[in-house]
Image (tube, rainbow, N blue to C red; front, side, top):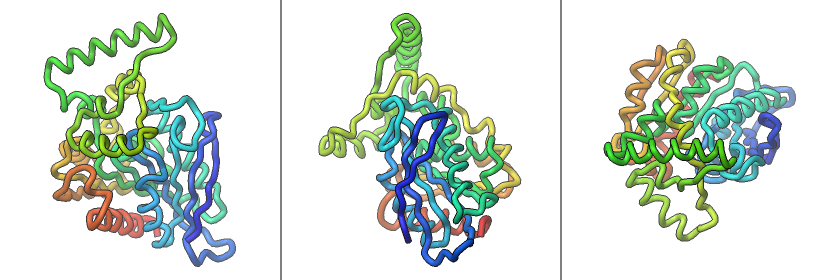
Length: 292
């Protein structure tokens, strides 16, 4: 397997990624390609290489990348707007299609956590995605943000966002929130707080606009448009960050062929040990079945 650092543009912004090429490529041969999408405030150097290597070892060309504003990509630092990330994903698909080792008509899309919501959205609006796999994701941004909060906290958040809208219009810049506060999940707090303590430069402040636009973001509204292209959803039964109900509702609305696998784990357990092996195996077999 060979890994190359690459660059491409998304709406005029330079993005940085890594291209994973399988061994045994012959001159002129074209393989299926897979674009990988990371989660909320994640970087491509995190868990994505573990999955990209599995796909490359199975014969696929895999592309990981940083969204605009994160990692090695350009753009306003820490700007996270769901539909802008969808544009980045679609431009990553275009870039991957243009690689000489890739069959442009056999493109798969894989994503995890926040990226596990981007997968059904992107596949629902972009027919170039011929097979899709999402894991520990969500189907409705409003439910993702609000269901972890009680009534009083929901009202307070709505008031904060309304005030921030006014501030952005009158002053040109709004307020910020950290990712732990936005997601408001015990598993995320337990996972991120020790990590950020050891690596404080990883802490980022997101705009209140991130929350506003996430509330409006609903992959469930387009998931039915994926069919007859195949969709695999891999959920975590005990997930409090992206509760399994989100994927269950996506699955109900999606057309065939589709599959929902629910693993007996929490949100972050999927990234290590036997659950990394299991989730990557499920994705690899799905892509092999429908793209090879």
